[in-house]
Length: 287
Image (cartoon, rainbow, N blue to C red; front, side, top):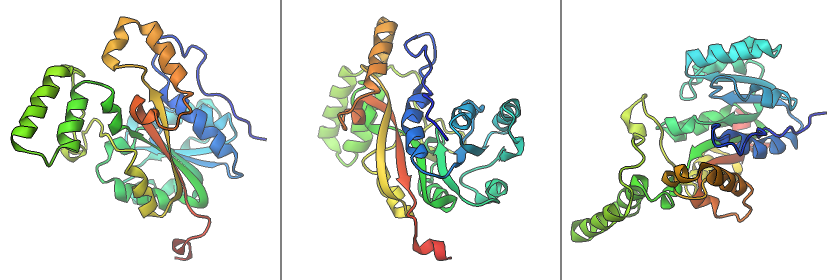
């Protein structure tokens, strides 16, 4: 019988370690997957294979692909170390279905997880449709996005961009100039040191930010239903303040991961997972 194994490391409160953001997301993902009978799982964007043992220890048969050949090689080595079939992990690009067709020969998947993938893809609509095509009817997907609305609480150049480029993009003239001047004088425009480029910049983009209020529509339009938003990677204050007391901020950040308000994550979490389901039956199944 498959059981839930908490993926959050014991040293989570240590600020000298990387913040285990994905582990907090998996704390939500794994129980949701374990409620269903299917155990065929696809990980898109396998990275260095860090999540492989998390899923296999919970009883899942994992396959995966990544756009980076070096990451695929590392994941294959990790699979061999765990006694798994390395051929279940290959190179692939979610935007190009023929590139990952080889790992879909045994059919669609009961669960699909993609962390850190969609923020690097400009054409999200077609990629989400590709997700739908490889999801078993009744299956679930868990797809991570960077949270655009987190900029409301960062008080840095991202906040400035949110107001000027998103909220007030149609406002011009003296009103825009006045707001721009006021924001620039009050915000930390020097942080972060680099700005994520737009997805329109090409394949070398860093990452894009998406609105959790509008992304669910993309999944509904692709045919998914029961679309939910789950927030993770909370920040108890402006990121540029964390260096003042790393221990206190890390403890506060971790405590917020258990937030049950239903709305604070919209502004305090820098990422969110879309949890959606392919209907058990649909018109496309008859094709």
